[in-house]
Image (cartoon, rainbow, N blue to C red; front, side):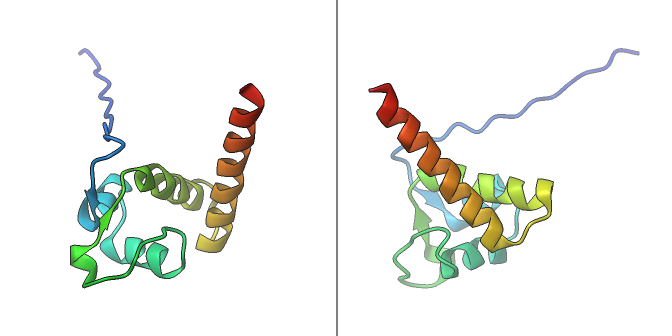
Length: 100
């Protein structure tokens, strides 16, 4: 019997909006988790309307996925995962400045 490996990828346009439901699905999380990210300031969103109507800029997909992975892989709380994500983003920005 042959074995098969299945890979999945997410292609996100830098300028395409992402609904709150799409963001939850892309992070393999529940809607409530995304709502918590917004209320805790992990994802900056101008809170207008009901959560079902929220739309995110696509760059938030990577940030939310990273928070989700950190919580899952290291079993840390949301605050720790958000702090680690902030620090990693700052390191990337500093490295980009050094590369110029």
